[in-house]
Image 1 (spheres, protein in one colour):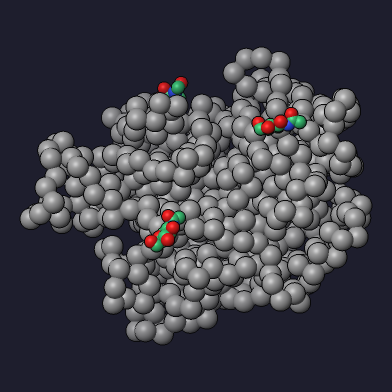
Image 2 (spheres, rainbow, N blue to C red; image 1 turned 180 degrees about the vertical axis):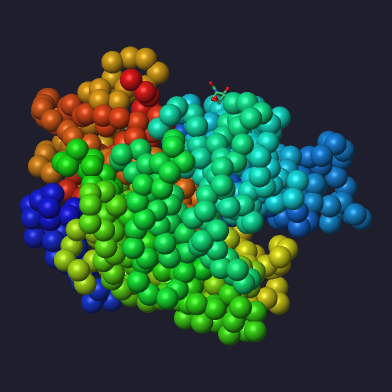
Length: 560
Ligand SMILES: *[C@@H]1O[C@H](CO)[C@@H](O)[C@H](O)[C@H]1NC(C)=O
Ligand SMILES: *[C@@H]1O[C@H](CO)[C@@H](O)[C@H](O)[C@H]1NC(C)=O
Ligand SMILES: *[C@@H]1O[C@H](CO)[C@@H](O)[C@H](O)[C@H]1NC(C)=O
């Protein structure tokens, strides 16, 4: 439900209040949220997932280890027919390694990848095209594009003629305020950053000593897939291992060095905790930025796992305000130790922690004891009252599992595959091709009576809403109370390996509410003032009434 700061919870009728009190004290027998199986097989493990503004989800795995579970009629290299026998059965090019999932029709189609995107990264450009970079072997310097389209058969992966200046495997990408530029940071043995798309052949990598300093020299690295968050002042927050900096990428200069997060375990791959930037809020002019880092592996867990010892993961989360002058980590404990988890910001400003394991580390078959129960974290509650435990899954979601938030308020959950190949028997955690959705508490029928519907957005014309522009949001509330309506803009992430790149949520100012006849409501909403706050691109806009989100509506922010 809504945070007390925002008031609306107090107004919820007694019955709903009792229900939510039962749900959130953690003493209830039936914990909230529901799971539903969407597909028995996607054929391809969604190791990487990203929601497009046309309500489809691009999913892909790797191309280098032979067959997936999705056989093609024609091989994607050369286009020759694939026979249902002989070598073709083991030839990886007779199988899809990427698919597009359509949320509306619950169906998939195959996509063609020309190079291996295993453990790669990505961001959406301002026109909704996914730029997707790096990977393994022939894909380690690749720059790929996926431009979603209405005539689905016509769009597919395109590979750029230019390539990265360094091999980037396990790097993180963040879209920048300057239109259509993303930064790509790190990667295995890549202690540097660079920009995409490439504008000239002189567009090179820049050394980043912070990545040398946070690298564990032994086998377990622990600074891969660094956590990146674009701060409200336009600087880049980079967290790797246990340390973090605020980085002015325009000048190649470290602006701040933050204190080390307490506790002994590292947080980045293969330790693999997760991180979010908490929602930015119009009430403070979007100035205050607070990051949160949760979970990870115990020191030495990666090595121990190779000897069959699965060490208990980290139980702590740290929160730190990265703006202002004084910085310290405030630590708290999750209900249990957890690693390889995904952290998603829900439209209610709560954080969902889902997937992963209690023991071990990331890497092939290096984890045990799947974390079946998601946690809901309410950032503005009193400490110790923030976590609650949600409905379990029966499907273990281990290494190479992912989760993303959909515009219908649900969470799409796929994977995992901790095995080298697609393996369905005689292993602890077989390759999992089922696709499920998790429906958070707010999807329950009790909450329908608060849900705004038929949301439309009207703005001054052009291809999108300019920074600082006022636009109109119209929706239907019937006779429901209009107190406590909030407007949330969300940049959908590119998700892989517990890192939701580019994920950001902004609570926008709404004013001048007009009640029209028949239960319609019209509100003027203000777009964030600058591209530092909201880099140009597609966002979902969600009307949240008393902590209950509407279906989201796509909007596009463009540079003024
Ligand atoms: C999955 O398979 C089972 C068993 O064949 C079937 O009963 C069920 O309807 C299928 N579910 C979906 C979502 O396709
Ligand atoms: C989107 O932007 C990319 C990068 O600038 C460009 O290559 C592509 O053609 C654009 N797509 C559309 C539909 O404008
Ligand atoms: C809202 O939209 C639905 C589906 O498009 C429609 O059936 C319904 O009549 C609309 N509600 C109002 C109040 O117009």
